Structures are given as C-alpha cells and as structure tokens.
Length: 114
Length: 115
Image 1 (tube, chains in turn orange, red):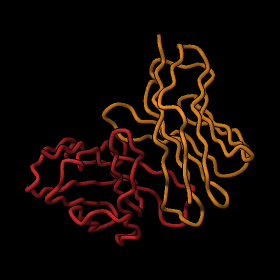
Image 2 (tube, helix red, strand yellow):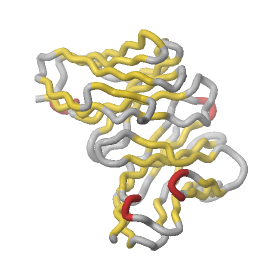
Image 3 (cartoon, chains in turn red, blue):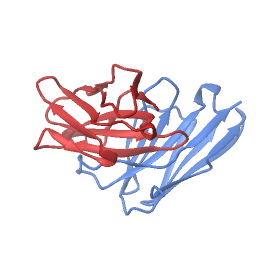
Image 4 (cartoon, chains in turn brown, yellow):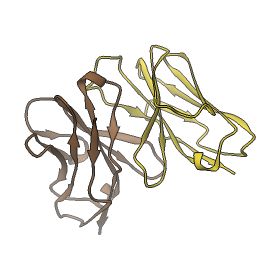
C-alpha cells in the first residue's frame, strides 16, 4: 500500500535561514512524488514534482526537493526562508499502476519568524 | 485565479438540508476529483471522474452523491449530513488517465459547517 509520512507537525525557522520539511514515502514500484503548499483559506498549490532523472528538483518560489531512493525520502528545502513562506506543506506520492491515487501526507506547518 | 473555481466558498447547513457544491475547471483537463480536508487528518480522496465516468469511489457514505455532467463541471450533492462531515471540501482536476506525473490543480475549497 502507498503511504506518505511527514514526521513534523510544525517547523519553525528564522527568516533568512535555510529550511527543510521532511517527507518519507512507501510505494511499490517507481514513485511519483509531489509537494504542495496551502495558504490560509486557499486550496493546495503545486510546488514541484519528481518523476525520474536528477535527484534534485527545483520548483516554484525558490523551493527544491531532494529524492533519496535508499532512504525513501523526498525532503523539501529552501536555502533562505521568507516570512511569506509560512504555510501548510503537503507531500504526496502516486504509484504508476494507480495513476489516480495521489496519497497525501498529514501536512507540516512552516512558520518563518521575522 | 487557479483555473478551478468552487462555489460556494462557505456553506452552513442543518442535518436535514439538501445542498450542492459546485466545481468548474477551465484548464482543459479530463479528470476531476473531490477531496475532504478535516483538521488534523490527511486529505481524503472521495471521488474521481475521468471523462465524466466515475473511476474511483473510496467508500464514501451515500449521503454524499457526486455528479459530473461534462469534463468541466463537477458537483457534490449533500443530504442528511452529520456534524462530523464539517470540513473543507476541495475540488481538483488533472490531465487524462495514464499521466501519473500530472499534478493536481485545486480550487480554493468550500468550507462546510453542519449544524
């Protein structure tokens, strides 16, 4: 069965510092991995995805994520956090053989302090 | 503008009421989804439609009834709901079946409160 784990309910970081939001996954076969962000009173917005190729993928708003097959992880990173990055972040995974089933993690709230 | 529009944004209804949520996408996608987002829980996939045909139903109670009249519109009909059904209901769309790498595009959701 597919699953996604986001071990941290909340991540706190000072503005200008690097940030990491953690995600681990479990899926049979090759995974398709996604990160989404949700701002208050809004739907989810797509940030980036990993399908194949380079393990480091770049996305919107300066975010990037590193795919690590041996650790089954897909951590979201940003070199320098902004206060406006404060939001709820979701990791998601989809297996090729079940193309509709995008399974989401429970979400991590990122709080960037000025 | 997300390309996926949901109405209403907020809805308060009693347990005996009947109401409908509406979703419209302007992205030329062929698959549409309903997700339920409750506090402290992962997003729950409720229904998936591809080319107006339901292809996934995650054992959702019958008090939720989806309708997809065409590839651009999706409805969720609600009747005799329970207070625990209070949540944010999110509509999403994506390209056609077989494109597992295609991201979902979400609307801003309908905040439903059942009293």
